[in-house]
Length: 312
Image (tube, rainbow, N blue to C red; front, side, top):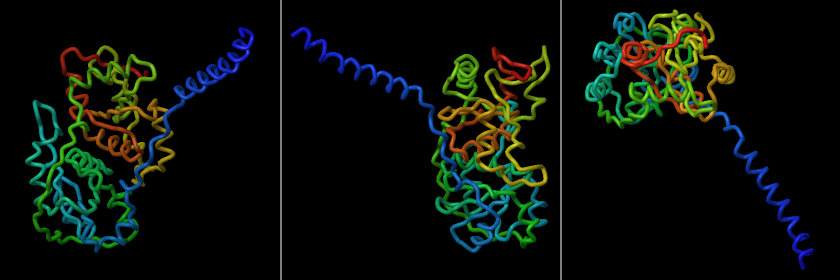
């Protein structure tokens, strides 16, 4: 009987060992790469074919109305970038009150349905900031950036108009997503995790130029501890070709900077403008992303926050 129990026990032991190996391997399996959200970018060809579609709303985002009046995509509505920004406690480019944002979009005829296509100033920064604002308001899932912007549209000899679009006020309902906005208190904790926990589930991305990220020793310049650096202009093909780089190239670039699939990623810059483009790009690539809007302007002045200089 004892002999039989030994013999019968061997297969069971082998099964248990194999199961342990499988479970261990499963636990170590890397998360799959996020799925690219291709609907967040539209081409000039797509837009040209959909200009007459009543469910497509094109917004020219700029703080300079004269630039809009000088020539815009036919039917595009003027969205004043300045109305999407506020200064709070000395920090520029913060989100205004929700009631103000609601009125801004309602006044230019943006309701609760339809595709919103964004383009604008500063190599796409203005459009990206408008996207972040719409995402915060719960309407980001129906917004997209025009790949290459007005610059590409004009380079293809497509029509522009100088007459302002005729709009009728609409009912715009905010559906707030406060989780996309990170405050200082939460950023302290996220920074600690990113800086101290190997293979942590938090990534922090500084969207500023490298020289600002590096800073100088013995000063309050540099970056938030744990942050990686990818300058937002690197998302674009070049300074003269403002189309986005291929998704595979962008994924590789962020991976080389240290971001990992499955991480919660927080973007920041100086005042939330450059970080908006990083926010959009990571959202497009399928990451779970949020933004520290007050960014380094607040962090560098806050009591008890560390600042790191150097590339590492």
